Every structure is written in C-alpha cells, then in structure tokens.
Length: 326
Image (tube, rainbow, N blue to C red):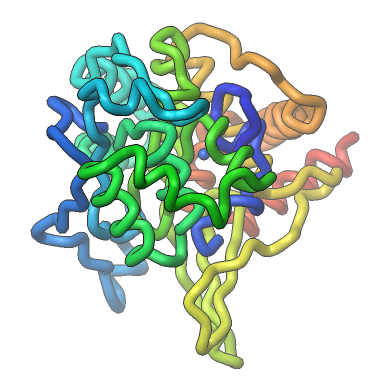
C-alpha cells in the first residue's frame, strides 16, 4: 500500500508499486543511521494458542533508525537535502498511542491491541529522504540497504552518488515523495521527514498505527504457496520464493482490497485527529463510501474488529450484503 505526494503512505501511492514483498520513530535520534537488532523477537503462537490469540502482529526484524541532521545533508542535491524537523518525536508518538487506544476502546477491541501500541511506537522510524528511499527501494535486499545506510552515515555525498543506478527513475521519484508506510516484513513504520511537515505528522503517524495494528493471518495451500492477510488485503508467496506478492482482488462493488485497508486507516486517522484527510482521490472517496456501507450493514465496531482480526472473507461477505441491499 503505497502513496503519491498525499498525506498517507498508501492513500496516494499504489501499495503494489512499493510492496514489501508484498499504510509513522526515533525518540532522541542517534548520531547516525544504524540498524539495530532487537532482542527478544516476537514469537508466533502455535497450535491451539494461535487459534485463540486475538492479536497476531507481524514479526519483528532488525530495526532501522534515522540519523539526525548534522549539517552535511544540507549540501546534498535536491530532493536529498534535509532540514531540522521541528517535531517532538516522543510527544508525537505518545499522542498517537493515546488516540489509537481511545479508538480501540470505542470499537470494543480486545485489550491486547492497545498493548501493541508501545511496541509500534518504538518501531516507528523517522528517516531522511535518502534513508526512506533506500529502505523502500531495497525492500528485498537488506544487505544493499544496510550498506547504503552505513555509507550515508559516513559520507552522505558519496552515498547519493552510489544511487546512480536507480536515481532518477519513476519508482525512486515516487518513493522519495511518499510520506510514510508500514512494512510487514520488518514490522516497522517508516516516516519520510522530507515529505511530512510537522503539521501533517499527527495524521500520518496515527494512520500508520492502524495499518500496523491489523493481525497477520498466515495460511498455506496444497501446492506449498503461503498466504498472509492483513485487514482486507492478502499477499501470496510461492513455496520456493522469498517475496510476497499482492493478490489482485476487490470487494463487491469494485474497490481493491488494499484500498479498503487504506479507507480504514483514513477513517481512524480522521477520528483521532479531528482533521480531514487531504487530497482525497476519487478511488479513496469510493473506498470510504464502501466502508461506510459496511458500517451500516454490520455496525462500525464489528467491521473494525474484523479488520483488526484480518478476517478478509467475512469483510467481503459484509460487502456483498451491502451491495445486494443497494
């Protein structure tokens, strides 16, 4: 779920174009970009415990944290230049947690979802445009990603020159103007400090929290293909493959499932901040209209709980009922 230069990573960006094999931290940002291996990775429940566990987030992976501005990036060519970001990251993340927790409570969601919020906040990375581009472009090549991030720490000018093979290109230019995205493969929210203004940051962060809150529902097929579903949206991975690829499917009425996930995140972003989501494209307006039709059929709380549980088939069933009802 990706984005054009609008507010959320997926709202204005085709998620499939930047899929993580597939919609915002560094508190007290470190002096350079580092990749931190978190201790105590999240373990998947197995057997009957998996069937009973209401909250099943993505698995943690090495965490990318963003470098502070030290003056060197100011001389980089556009759009890699960075300026000090006038945002209190700790307060921003604390507010987003409170807002999301209030919405979860209003929806009657199991308490374990609210308990995920501190971890989501801790794994939110505020990145420079260069870092954000590298993380997004090399989504399946972590060795190259990490090497470029280390080079950017040591020599930003040389690091930019090393992008000659991919910059400029349509995909890279789209990425560098993307505000944020949540990456299932690393269980991390990435925010592009070069594309998000301080005024936009509260919307972006709580929006991405709602992408991160949805369960990851795994299943296997007889041919060995794996599938994973988050919210309305499903990806598949061949038996011998490494990359997840999105399933091109729609709810009844024609809205792609990845846009239905985007509609939920926008709905909750607006509810949390009290501010409208800007630059709403026609396809997003249609997705929001469809989501509200689902609310009318099954109730807002029920639909949001099914989204959190990633019960895509049940959500599609409600969409069918809404379409039949007309």
